[in-house]
Image 1 (cartoon, rainbow, N blue to C red):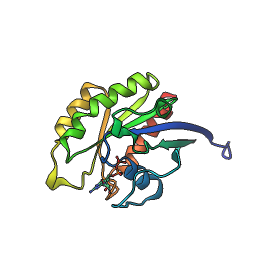
Image 2: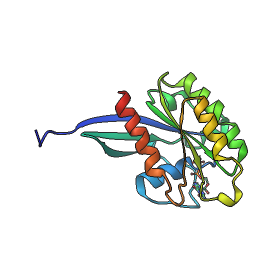
Image 3: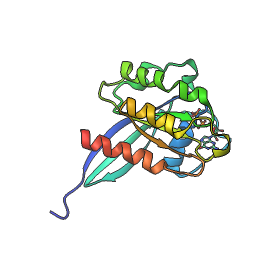
Image 4: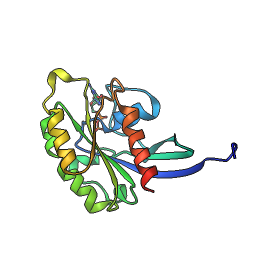
Length: 175
Ligand code: GDP
């Protein structure tokens, strides 16, 4: 019927990757539509959330932030527990953050649910002049590991909606 209530789903989404790649900034751009170049390391709340429509369903993404603990190269197990999806973020201007991507992917497979949906995000795509990681290298890694890849900018909002909605659609199709 035309007035059928949409079904509601909740998914836990974790952001992983090296400190400084823009995880908090991506979450803030997506949820609040804001970019703050002086953003302080995560304050307080365990997660922010945003609800989006996929077909006739309402998908609530609960977006967890690392609160800076990624500096220890490993996150608390409660962070991963029950996560349905993950965004692995690197900074296209810092090769070292890309070289660490695979260990974050392995950490996800070790700690989170086995069939977790993963997307790779090459962030700070607005900084083309200082790019160190090519699109081709990242795409090759993604293809080899059957991961979706997208370049984003939390600053200009480039592909930020796409990043989260691609994941929401994936979750909706797989669950
Ligand atoms: P996190 O440690 O991974 O959560 O990274 P933050 O979100 O705290 O961002 C680290 C720094 O990079 C901050 O100074 C941000 O303003 C900056 N930053 C984040 N995303 C972008 C982006 O897409 N473009 C540019 N130019 N700077 C960004």
